[in-house]
Structure formats: C-alpha cells, structure tokens
Length: 427
Ligand code: IMP
Image (cartoon, rainbow, N blue to C red):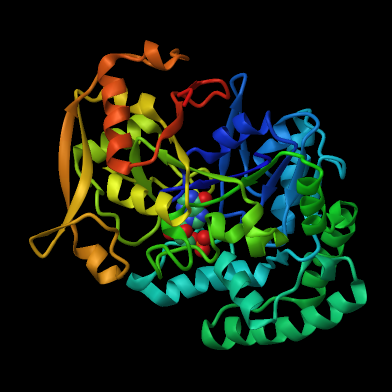
C-alpha cells in the first residue's frame, strides 16, 4: 500500500507532527497539501523540540523527499526562517530534501493585516484565527487575485500583479479600517528577495508525486489542522480556509483520489480547540483546567491556551467516516494517567432526544448536550510502555471502549512527546 493519508480527526493539535515524524521512517515522500503557517507541528527528538509550521514533518529524517504542494498558502518569510532555523540546528534543508510547488499561493503582509483587521471588525462574531493571513490569502485564490510562488520568481509579472492587488488592499486597509497603508516598493523588494531565495526549491510537485506513486514509492500525505476545522465539513464559519482531510489531497497536490490507498485519523484521548466556535464537550471548570495543565495545552503557533474537554466519540466518528478512515491513532493517552475517573461523550442530546450523528447545522451543534459515560482511570505512569499488553488493564479497557464507540480500529497509541513513545496495536 504505497500511499497513506494522515489527518487530524478533531479541531487540530492532535499531535500530528510527532506521528508523521514517526511514520515518515517507512515512507519515501512526505507531502503537505493544505494550510500554511497557521499549523504548528511539534516533534521531539532526543529531548530536542522542533516546531514545524510549513515544512513537512519528514524533514527530521535523512533521505526523505519533503513536498510543499500547491494547495498551501505559504508565508515565505516564515518558510525561510524555518529553513534557516533547521540548518542552524544541524538539519540541512536543500532542494534535494525539500521542494515547493510553483502553484502554492503566497501570503503577503497585506493578508496578515487584513486577517487581524477583519477579526477586529467582526468583534464578538470573530473566528479566533491565528492571524497568519490564511483566510484572506485563500479568499484571493478563489477571487483569482492571488499571487503564486511562481509569480515570486518572475520579477516583471510580480511588479505588475502586486501593484494592481496592493492598490485595492490599501484602499481596504486605509479607507475601510482606517489603518496605515503598505508601501508598494518595500513590499515588492521583500517579495523579490523571497523569490530569489526560494527559486531553487520550486518544482512541479504534482508531477513528481504522481510519478513517485507510479514507481511504487511510499507516500505519506500530511494533513494540517483537523477535520472539524474543514472549510466545507467543519463547524463553519468557525473553520480554517482549506480542506483539511483526505478531500484536500486531490486538488491540493494534483493527485488522483483513487490512488490514496489508506487513510488514518489522529485524535487525542480527550479534546481541545483553539479559537471560537462550538465545542460540545468543552469543560470550563476544574477538569478542563487539569487537562490543560497535564497536557500542556497551549498553541504551538500562537501560545494561546487551548479549550479542553473529554473525548467526543460522536465528533471523531464523524471525522473518520467522512474521510473513509480504515484506522486511527490515539495520542496523549499518558495525559489521562492523572485522572481517577475518565469520561467520554458517547452521544449527544438535542431538544431532549438522543442524537448519535454529528449535526451539520451550526445552530444544532451549539445546542447539543453531550451524554457522558465514565470509566475508572489507571493512575499509573504509562510513558515507558511500548507493548500494548504492558498497559494497565484500566488503560486497555479505556482504549477498547473508545474503539467500540468510534467503530474504527486504533492502529497506534502515543504515550509521550518523544518520537519513540508509541505503542503499536499490531492489528
Ligand atoms: P486560521 O486558519 O488562522 O484562519 O484560523 C481559523 C480557525 O482555525 C481558528 O479557530 C484557529 O484557531 C484554527 N486553527 C488554525 N490552524 C490551527 C492549528 O494548526 N491547530 C489548531 N487550530 C488551528
């Protein structure tokens, strides 16, 4: 089975970076297909922490081809900082191990500005974005006024297109929001410098990934964010601006969907969310606070405290079903070692009636009341366990109970931030 899609099955921050890094060992290519610097994929290797925003998590292994595909909204300054930061720590990033699609869209300063100004404009109705310019960049892509990486490496085209676009953006920034406008020459020269540095990395990534599949190479598709933040299938409008699951791979890479051989979701043993929007199992009391402390639940990109709550089996079931997942990976199981009793939302109640499906309408979702069931905890350190049979009985009971509620087998468990703190299920 040469291709595998791995995606977040909650609201992001499921620990994808660590899992992708672990799975990368068995793959030749690691391909990011959507999102941008809003993501923060954390990988810990030998006690050293790496936070990757746009570079695929396969970069920490030798001999892997890491692909930034056309579906991304790339912030060139952040990308170059990531490349330099890794090189300073002894991980050389070069055109042999990283390539960037010329079709990927570019995030400019005006996108970041407009992201923050729109949030201010929305007031209480804000989305709680990461402020990285993601929404405005994808909006320009759809409006056909965006610039792509290929435009950055073509100075004449860049001058002409950026000039036209920035005139309109400055009108929005200045006339509507009453803020200082951006200087065209300064933006242009920054963009030209980015283009010059990125030029050696630019490639026809879609053709490369398709050829790799034909040659029988093993391809890992790395999702960012989570399915419940998907632009079409998440809790709209409290979502990010791309297709975060398997559905994003076709257009985001230029890869035939029928060649995506397997799909695995990733979900934490409890739930978190950053930003606004419905979150049925959110616990704003002591328990949520303990989950935040035990799990160190603060955003890898923005440092914001994450909203926390118990595992939501209805939401994860929906995410896995939507993406045709044959398996899933449960992360942060070790965080639950601190709890003498563990709850799970096995169903919702809406207007006094049981609902076992994830409601599509935001108004319904906001009104659901989770139906909780509880099991005893194990209250034992499990971070050193590497074989499923060595887990305490209560931990195995918890895993198998959730697996039954969700209806999809768990293929791997994660019990700590380090690369090797995983337990295969051997299914
Ligand atoms: P944006 O992607 O910055 O536009 O933010 C839209 C929503 O997605 C906000 O609720 C963000 O908090 C959330 N979001 C974006 N990226 C991530 C991520 O990597 N992890 C978790 N939440 C994210």
